[in-house]
Length: 470
Image 1 (cartoon, helix red, strand yellow):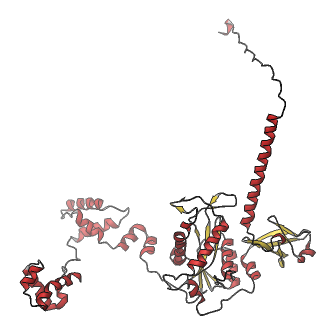
Image 2 (cartoon, rainbow, N blue to C red; image 1 turned 135 degrees about the vertical axis):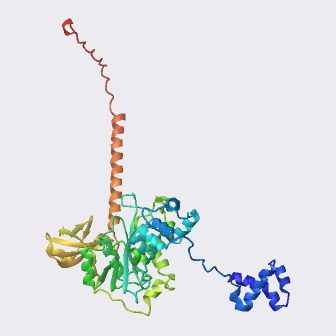
Image 3 (cartoon, rainbow, N blue to C red; image 1 turned 90 degrees about the vertical axis):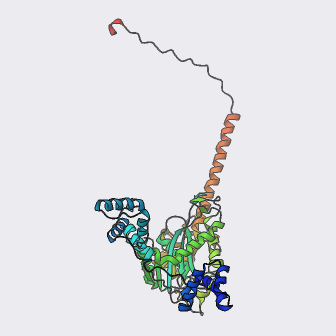
């Protein structure tokens, strides 16, 4: 199209202003014969006549079919051969059969003309072909909470664990497919497990205390990975009790989780580079400083204040706006206790003492426990909030016991582990100080002992030999 416009601009003085064709051609530094040919085409075919004509045999090969088939067969075989190797082998075959020899450029053009999908399928196998060339169905749920996606990722940041050592955390995120809103998440250390998925799902389903994060409710479908943490019997039972259809993605097929994978990429590229301990090329650019709780707070603030609040590139609306839609009412569990019984499955046997139930260095009390002193009970707790526990006796719910010392605080299991590690370090420092002070007293304050007389070593006896021993 640009070439046709250029030619028309050269002919325009002759067509519109009456300038001679020779003068117009000289002014544009174009041969007169070329300008005459353009004018003839324009008068015959109009503007299309000024377009560059392609050769009728432009896309046809002018090589012998046998050599073309030989080149393509070598290019599609295994192991993958370079064009130079293919050219040498084809040349040897052509000379032995008396055929015309192809140049290196001809062999290169034949190899380049092969369908890339065919090359991928032949060289890399069906999995690579499927990921690159097969059609995919881009599906979007019709309404909020119709479909949720859940997945884990290893974050590109280093933090300090309870013992003050650098560790790389994981993130479990749950996304609403319709609105792209993040409805729940969990930051943790250690390998992903069914408990981590349950805790993230618990946060996603129940109402949040943050008014800027209104997402909640029971989804109709939960789409998860095929990992062992997502295929656990506990998650299946919880999904059945909540009437959630649990769908697992195909093995080694990450395409169906592309939306939540994109969220992970956005988090790793936008938020984590601003935090201390960010990893680049597998190494931290700065020293790790954040604790697990501080990283959790940073990610939560970014999700509610930035990701969920700004317009999404595909939907054109902020995720929260899309999720709220026209003021619909999400389906909720009957109570938080019922939800915890299904999802929070950390159960420990304990003995009811006169002062309550002891767990993780804390004491939990409830008046309902009075008749059960000396009885064995089972407690269930949320590792992210140890302010209270739920007590069961013979699989029957008794009460919610609260730690009186921390009744108005949210205590996590990591907080307790951090406090324990700090206490151990403090005690170890005191022990070292005591030992060093004792050693100094022994050296400085003790009376000097008389030095013992030097004991000369006895001279070793020389073994005598006799003539008979020779």
